[in-house]
Length: 314
Image (cartoon, rainbow, N blue to C red):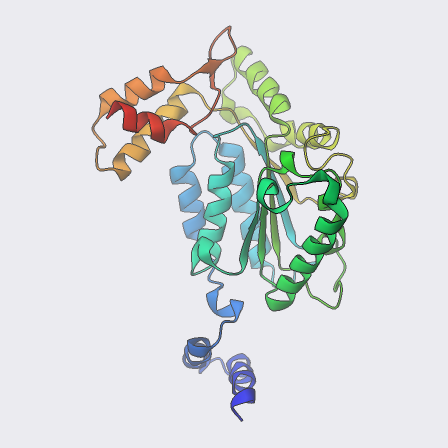
């Protein structure tokens, strides 16, 4: 009897709207189902993006729009696949963390949010076949346990060539793969690949006297896609995932100016209770390295070194 209790409670939960809240609390009190932890808050995600990500109007808009559209679709025909591209310190990992934080009640510590780092999980280019089998089984097993799983692949530029293509069957528009419904999953690829193309367009835009907010997603989508596809160290080099258009959006992260860096400094100072330290904001902004040599427009490390420099100047 105890063995069938969870199933009975779930059936009651689905069949009775009036009793929904009561039975859901009862069911989730002893169940580790991802349906109990999956608590997406699109409004808070949008607020977090626009409040705490600086200089990234394209990423803010694209991520907010695509995640919102995906979650509002009760029966998506394929998973959401986002590929983040840009130089170091521009907010790629930060945004991926925001996704986890606002999709699951237990945030990034949720057992249904999975993070992969090539140097840790796939360190040898000689063991691609082994990694492919392991990754395929890992994704399949976790999708079986939770169709709303989130998979984040960081530092894709360090991923052994061809490894990521093992995910191809999971990313297309089929209904079921390996007897698993996978269409509600979210995949995020994070890479510095494509940063040269992004920098080039932003620099040309600046030299032409145009505001960076005038840059549109369409200005960079194809440019980034081609750059990543033809880059031998992108992790997506000649990838069938790119060939078959299985990536929902290539999300460009623009290089940050001194103004953006100083906003990062101010935000972190406020977290430390030192919002009014204008001297530290000025000192950190001045101490950063900027390029190109002619103009010094963009921080070479984005906001990545900000925390360390704040500690030095405080």
